[in-house]
Picture (cartoon, rainbow, N blue to C red):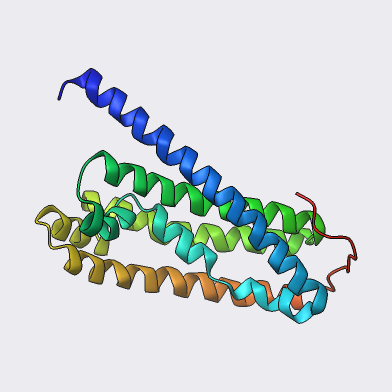
Amino acid sequence: MGTIALFVEHFTVTLIGTAAGVLIGGVTGLGLARLLAHLYMRSDRVLKLAVFLPWRTALMGLLVPFAVPLVTVTTVGLGAKLGIVSVGVAVAGLVIAFTSGILLTRRYPKSQRVELIAAARTVATVAVVLQTAFGAFGAGGLGYRVIQHFRVFEIWEAVGTYSLILVAVLIFDLVVGTLQYVMTARETAPKFDKPLQA
């Protein structure tokens, strides 16, 4: 396949995957925000415990360049279809997190201190994911082993090794999340009677 054909394929896969991800993620994110807002109105405790939801672990795990392909290649095979599914899943995860986060923050504003801790939590999980990606190019760690398995199509061995990386991401996520919970627990979320508006 020539360079121009690969260029066209690259952008076609990106556009289709992104469009599908935005559509699915946007609808899902809106629904999730409405559901959580309904639960929050019933109990402040739900709002405070929600900080332990490891959405960063799931999201960052999916955003690693070879995370989604490792799982989907066994069902859809190689090629453009794999690219579309991988991009779509990753984009949908981002859109779900951003959509629900923005809507809920509008309804339940956080203090600057809690927002900074939440940002630090995201950075901590991203750091583990970055090392995984860098490791695939020889920077050490488990990322290099994952890509070695993938190159010889040892898919389940790669998935098993990558699961260890997800455990590390989850540990970072929950450790910083504990600090976020302590800070959030000191604040009282405002109550709203009106339904959440997009």
